[in-house]
Image 1 (cartoon, one colour):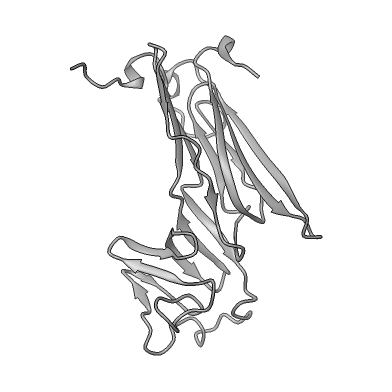
Image 2 (cartoon, rainbow, N blue to C red):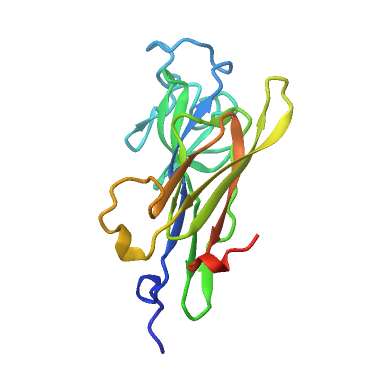
Length: 217
């Protein structure tokens, strides 16, 4: 059988579209009050206070009677997960009112010189109504030559009316070797765009063209 195709050795550049691989998610403080002292930064008596090396302070918790909705945490041998979304938790900070989670979706596409291509498809990320993506601590990052990336979501205005949001960025390079020494993500082989705040769900899109003339509308 023929060896697997390597996009870096067939004249095509691998596109990796990463939407905040490590997400910072803000959670509502209404559910547990505004205090952040040690009196509320621990698990309830008789409840599990850690999952691996990660602390689980109340109102988060595992097991019946150990958490306040919707802060149920599932803990297993692979880590801690927000039960309402099955997103993996990496850190919980009551002081900052945020959690750091691992984005389960890395959107990618490989184009080959023989005309074939493969991709990860479209993977939406959905959070519950109490958790919103932080617009100050997350960015969409796109890596590739002649790639246009877009992240779309839905957010609410001050009047609680939902409206769509979209952020885009474009990266360009002649070939893979032209970005070997690039150390900044500023458009040459890599670009970044902000992620709109107050968003609890988003999906990514990408457009890839190895030659400028192959771009469509």
